[in-house]
Length: 107
Length: 127
Image (cartoon, rainbow over all chains, first blue to last red; front, side, top):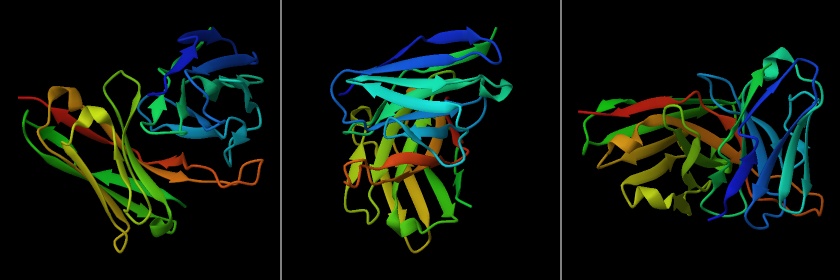
């Protein structure tokens, strides 16, 4: 199975900060990586697909990038509504797997 | 507007069975791969099962060991998950999720990714 390791597990930041979350895959996944945002008590929401494609309706302050098997989600200027938990997920092969999540909290 | 509405969750005793349903609307259901993803209380996301648009290919997480069966009715725009021999560790919110492919930068049609999620249905396994 492909393992996805997210770092950090939790992060405190302030409104306006630039934030980066990393997801490392245990093997190559050909950019078949997605990012999701989940707020407490709500369903996850798609943010990024194909490592860097922005899902329709998602603000442009969200972006994704890749270097080898290291994937990055960047929020350029944190807004109050961005405080949530973020998950990466690979869809290169079954079983589909998720990272363990990164909780983004208000400092 | 894409809508995925799960139903059928509830409290069930260990060893019991339950069937979840997902009613889809706002898109051409028959052309999309559909999936189930679950989340135990306070835990992360776990993929459960996927079924292709025609139902010709079905995939399950190894941990389910044949206890779960996914199916779809394209005439009724619905997805189902039959869960047997339920255990306490199956307690979770179960999400119905649509998956879609796209043309990547090389011009190839990609594997499907999760684009829309339902609101979830809570299954509690407890005596």
